[in-house]
Length: 434
Length: 166
Ligand SMILES: NC(=O)C1=CN([C@@H]2O[C@H](COP(=O)(O)OP(=O)(O)OC[C@H]3O[C@@H](n4cnc5c(N)ncnc54)[C@H](O)[C@@H]3O)[C@@H](O)[C@H]2O)C=CC1
Ligand SMILES: Cc1cc2nc3c(=O)[nH]c(=O)nc-3n(C[C@H](O)[C@H](O)[C@H](O)COP(=O)(O)O)c2cc1C
Ligand code: SF4
Ligand code: FES
Image (cartoon, rainbow over all chains, first blue to last red; front, top):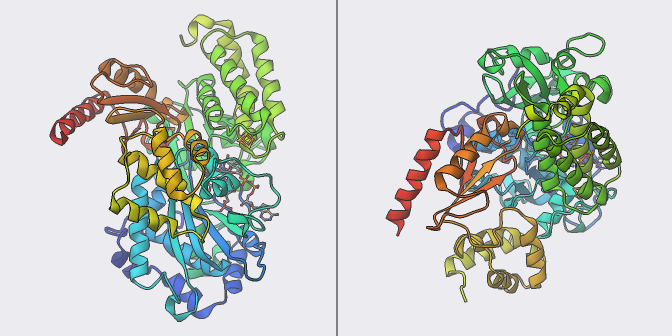
């Protein structure tokens, strides 16, 4: 059994309510931080923990906090990214829905460390009922003195507000999110400047994922050094994985990052094996934008070692034989699934979600969908496969934000590892979908 | 012209107060949600102009936003909108069959509304419920692990509610 730090109490009956959460030891980290530590000491603890951003990019959280500019007289903001819209990802939803006070607690500690008196949770618009759950938790925290003015006599003031988005994947990208929070279209800004220097209303801003913020609570409770001992190398602590697709037990699991991919898929503690007694064909382990891998490369690295569920091992071999940890959205495909069709749905997704600012992304995503559709529906030519490859290469690296890359990588990986399947569709158009 | 009730206006002012002075434009997306709920499930030009006047911004700033975000309806929709997810993880769990079943049962295509104005069918992209696929959004909530039987039951439930609410 792996160690649980975030979901340990998620199954305690009534944990959504303040009284139960508090009785189970909730809000201790706020007491510790506000009564016995300085903001910089809190940041130092997070640095020591080695915690990496759980939104997908894996940037060290403590380092990001220490990069926050602190000009005199200018407010600073903490914004929690709860946009969660990467296909395959539903871990933040689980955390917010079942143990909302963990997020609120983490936000208070993080706001204290960063000096944010107005903190926002930007949540995807479709999670409408979770807004109510969060607002209830925030109100309870406030009624019990954990929010508002001069919290615990520390002189620190803080309010947390929930802001609903309105259906746009791109608003998960942090600068698009900031634009959206300012009441505009979600068009990403050019980085740098990073939000830590110029963010919400041009003020220094830290944007962190829901899970990153929640992890601050156990880090303060057990100490950064202790947290860093869990896991291996630069993959410290625990990670939430949302598993879906053709498995027996889809759901959200907390893992420590030492277990093998094989154990994660086949053990009863986690996915419980492939559904209906089928065989594993392929997997996208970190949300739709990371490369798909066929079963052999997924379970073993190119060196023949067991692949482990952590940042380093999943990316071992680069894109030739590896993939990425990403957001932890683990999508499993069994032997009956068609990679071309699956890739087509992802291409459609990215075409739909492109904000349209950069032509390689706007035009390229449209073309990729169109060509994939032709191939899938038996109207493709052999040269289309090479054309598809060319288009994705022209998008990668040529855009303002990484949505372009995110659209290109799934297509590239599908061709790289499943070219025969594309060729088969072209050769036997009648057997393809019609 | 339709206007917010006093209660909704209070809510709007409460939202504006979350932001620093002069940053009331930040309230636009939340206020458009309220407007859509209040004024028949969609945003007419008149509604958008009204929101612009409340937030003291130009109408064009509202149109820009309303056309960008997929949750805003720019034309009238049925009383119950079925928004079925069709992205990869839902697709491999049978969302195509679910969409076909709804089309046949309601006699409409994707994007259409039934003649009685009761149902609209839309397809949407991943809603963050991939582990509970296939799924759809219906109003504020998700309906997950969909089957044909569940769709039958949901349609009956909506028809019943429509009668009691009228
Ligand atoms: N969770 C989800 O639903 C999704 C997650 N993603 C993930 O998003 C990732 C890409 O995100 P980006 O924010 O574009 O990555 P990034 O690498 O540009 O930034 C990561 C974080 O570190 C900060 N940062 C990096 N360098 C910095 C510096 N020098 N000073 C201050 N701050 C700095 C950024 O502001 C950001 O908060 C992808 O790897 C993908 O896995 C993508 C789509 C959806
Ligand atoms: C297209 C795109 C979509 C993204 N969507 C999300 C998201 O839904 N949730 C999230 O936390 N980060 C998302 N990110 C990453 C954010 O830009 C940012 O790196 C993250 O919120 C930082 O938090 P972290 O350091 O705690 O991971 C997205 C990035 C891109 C390029
Ligand atoms: S890469 Fe795509 S989504 Fe990102 S800014 Fe450019 S057009 Fe918009
Ligand atoms: S793919 Fe349908 S909810 Fe994610």
